[in-house]
Length: 478
Image (cartoon, rainbow, N blue to C red):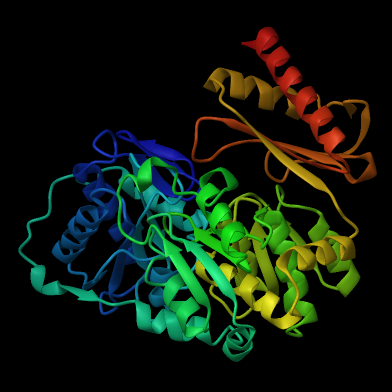
């Protein structure tokens, strides 16, 4: 949601997230739910149900049922999922059930102490800035009193799984995957994808070994984020059994994690490139490629090769989703691990993304590592990406952003800056295809420096330079 705060409730780029029992409390959930209800009254009639979903976090189910009771008090008919479910699943059901949208209780990939809530409109994608600004405005004066509990008759449970699975099966070449007889290792990371991704894999005839397929509100003491450092066990399992692929998702299953047959973790940038090529080359699909300002420019090269339009958006899948609702998009995604494709909802989906990579292997009959190498070469790569996460004080962050905005450097680490972009943060386009992006996180207390360049040596060169310059700005201005 758009930036704003009321009584300790702070909104970031994808809803309100907070620490459970600190600012994320039952009283604040009641307040936010009433603010969302005020928006709903301006956009929908009460003959349409409001759906509510939740992930595997501590108390997420209780928060969800509290919100349901608040909405029922206000005259809304509410359908709550019968168990934790992925964000893309509740999003799809918000569309197919002709609802007034959905509330999803999740903090996505954030650590276990966090929970969150976001509103998903009936078009099944992230809420636009206009919608979330309206919700923030309605917080003023919204009550934080507990619900009466007297309208339980307006609340029912439902299973969102069957409709979603039918939809996803229609997007995949099931027979092709079955014939490939893939050997798969799947790490659920205690997430909502258990019972979903493993079900799809079984339906597609994959020989699958699954790990961590039960609810653990502490996520095994790790981050519920499918990054390389969280997937060491998955890498070992893939290598030990000579599996074709390793798959994982984040806490609410809208982000994907892929390990190839050699045990190499594939970056989201690489997966986006691989799948864009797969959709055009193997499935004959056409449409625009949409990426955020922080995502690899190899996608630009691939779009040029295949004669596709390329759109760049601000960081946040809601901007990618907006473009998907405006025009025909082949694939849209972001470097943080979210993507969607033509024919799917305008919301990122880790379950589908994982299965599309399996489908690409099935079509080509080649090892995943070879497919990756071919996609990179076809796009004129490799390019090397890196992200610096710098924990700074708020005054320091402000000073850094102001300095780069007012006086962008003419060169970085000896490489000339040829253009400055201001779509989201400050993006410096360098010679030889390199670029650097500086922007504050919308959900965490840090500033991020993204970069992409032509060699590992230049990655180190640019990273060292940016860190040094940022600390010099602190010394001068803070």
